[in-house]
Image (cartoon, rainbow, N blue to C red):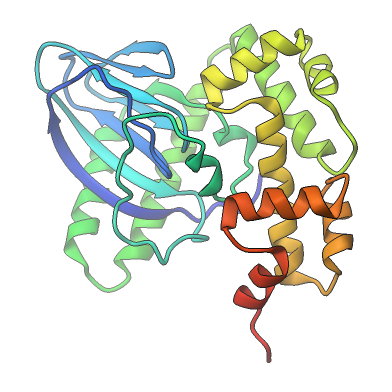
Length: 277
């Protein structure tokens, strides 16, 4: 697992009247429910709310709240790293699926946090309230304290989650994600990813879109772009070499994919984010 140092962008207690539209967020979301007045639908999977239920949703995954009453919950908007910490204000939710979410994808490829999940967790509410108190206090080192509290909470959620048996879908999706993250620099195809998961490519693509919001090929491109970002900033490799190291089959393809995400070329990205000493 890569080093996790959460950046909390927003934390508050929310009272919300459900509606039927999906929201899609460009950062990660954690909801800790304080009542059982409805349901949360995460990419088509409906979960009954209850006091202490903690629901983690990766960026780009559609979700909505369902029910007749007012849902009360603690909402936390965050990233797993400080990679985008210059964006301190909460990102606005979008109410439709959009390819734009691939463009703002932040480089946090931890298998454990690649899929949405929910757990009933003793103590989640208390830790959620601590996050709110720190977020609004603005005391010295409040950002560092927020990171520490959220990190502890996330790992408590993982412990609870991994104490339960994984479903067959969970296991196979994890196998596919692991295969991508271990082999992204190779010339792998959708069929190779599907074989690693034991699914037909068409079926695996439907599962990826349902649970992750993107196709296996789009997820592979995310991982490759993340690798390229790091190489551009931390090495003197040429753009052609970075392209090859990241798994792209041509510099043209690499540049096109990179510009789709960042709006600038790899060379311009390097010039913008590399400091000359």
